[in-house]
Length: 181
Image (tube, rainbow, N blue to C red; front, side, top):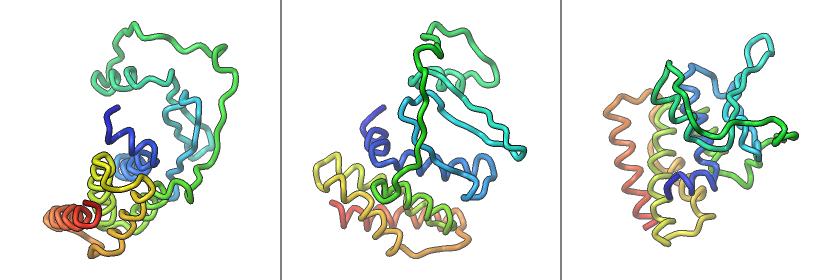
């Protein structure tokens, strides 16, 4: 997965960034997007429609097939990857995420709800703090603390232009680096 993605997964920031992506990719409201913990990692995504029915993308806990499909969409190419067998997974479990323990996910939801340039602040701060953690400059538990400080410190712009995003990203990275080393 790579170091950055591994840390984002451990902090659940990866899910927070996916929540923000889903809003923009599918035109959803923040309250329409929910994260559910699924320890078996068989269901990769799930959509519930207006009538209450659901469709899931399911498969083995292996990203090679989803990546192949993303690269070949809308076609489906033959694959020699192992096949899913329901008999091997007789129980699928789900739970709500603990937003106190995984504050990065809570911060991502907050950034999404606030809107404007807040998701940009969140992303830029996260990239710097993860880098700082990987260089042993901060503790893992400091990651959400520093991101939250940046969300409070950087000027909020409700309707940012492209130039505002560029300036926000630059300022956030600079101040986060000063704070996190």
